[in-house]
Length: 319
Length: 254
Image (cartoon, rainbow over all chains, first blue to last red; front, top):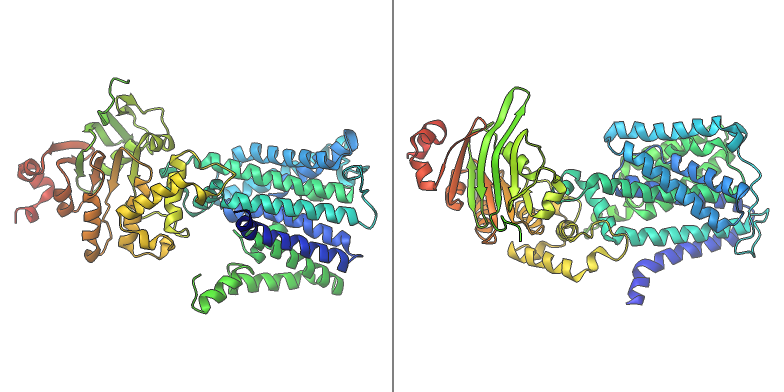
């Protein structure tokens, strides 16, 4: 029983952990960059839950990411430097904002919904900008000093602790999401994505369930934001930016929506290509990303994770 | 025990207007357990409106929808489903990207109040799977259980539509043109499925297909312009001169 569970749920996630560890030893001087990838993966996973599973169109997930980042940052500055508590605060703040804004924006559908999600992030951006006394405004929130993790591991300059910390959180998030996706709520999300009308007809309170999914995903986005605040010891207004939301959606589409591994691969590929292309040509790197996205959308609409399925269909197996 | 237990669905004085157009005028109808009632009438007579008033999709301007003597005015569409009022769709709206089994699982888990659970595997609840197997077997769909619903033949999708709705364990079932669009060859399969519906279920069949109506119904209600023109046994309706003139036409005399 446990072995079956490990085989189904544990093995791929364990592999993620192992690959993460290999990267840790293989690229000891790029840990800062690799940590940003891990945090972004959590953020993109949260968008996958909303967009890929729940079918809720969003370009404003940064609202929850930013709230989590500021909440965790302010908590560290003013209340406690305990990293794990800070994570909980960040996740809670992200979930809170998702719940409150979700109650309003999820009344809308399609393009209207998309605009409203952008609006929420923009409003929070402006609030953070104006509330200089609290947030540091455009200068960013600084002075974050995290206590050692479990009272033992200090957040060092090379970023070793930060990387392993982020990796552990990512693995836990992945375990949580894999369990959620096969749970009744995961099936409900897919059902709502397929046909909200029919879901209502079989007695599902669709609006309430959308708010619930949006809230859970908001908590994960807040968690990612909190991680970023703790690891980089800085929160800038960028955390609420439209480009953050949009880029994350691009990463998800690249990898394949509605698949957890799509979020993981899409983020990794986007960030690495971004990194390499921007190093090679700081002015035209977006060109490479553009071509890549065009290619994926045209030739493999299911995203990079759809390739395997397409090959299987091509060679006559079951899709 | 509530006074009206077991009396089934009762509509009393239902009225609904869209702007100046009255689509339901003082409608009264009883659907006791085991009823096989058909609702017929020309296009625009208000049949679909009546169905929507029953399911709670529309709110009446006046009048009551009662289940076992309890007024459902304040009960939402989703909550009515849980009380046992279900409806099949005229145009198939299934979860095309999910397997047949997953389609039914959605209905059963929701009916059992488990649809919002974060924990446990959706496909590992024995009680849920038992109901799914039972309904699959009833409609002869066991062999297709793991197929993607979007890939099934249309007639089979209509059966899935029925199976999905029965998974809600309804007491009142509104069938909106259950055989619409089904190729001739697959119609007997649908009719057989409809004849095999649970005996104590109250069924309201909305259809244009007179063969189907006269084959299944024990009671027929004729609607015209938002009002009930006539109702009675199939024989009474077939011999009703007004109905013949207004609706059934010469085709029926032959």
